[in-house]
Image 1 (tube, rainbow, N blue to C red):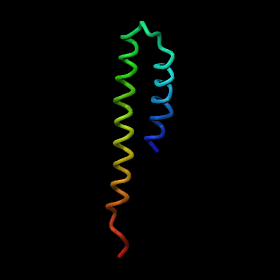
Image 2 (cartoon, rainbow, N blue to C red; image 1 turned 60 degrees about the vertical axis):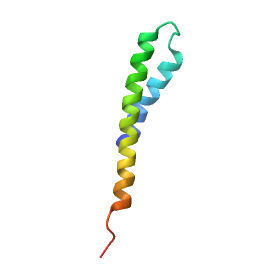
Image 3 (cartoon, helix red, strand yellow; image 1 turned 120 degrees about the vertical axis):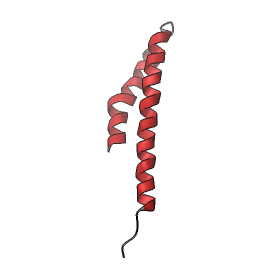
Image 4 (cartoon, helix red, strand yellow; image 1 turned 120 degrees about the horizontal axis):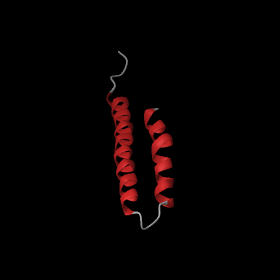
Length: 61
């Protein structure tokens, strides 16, 4: 779903960029990390929301 799309389109490429980032370019690394962190929490919240909906969904009848 949406969480997987966020991971594939943003989180994975940002993680690769962070790994390849020049160690002396701290401002770039901080920007990448901030974006990665925010989008990662959003993706995680979407997953937990989906689990919560599945667990609390009333049964038939």
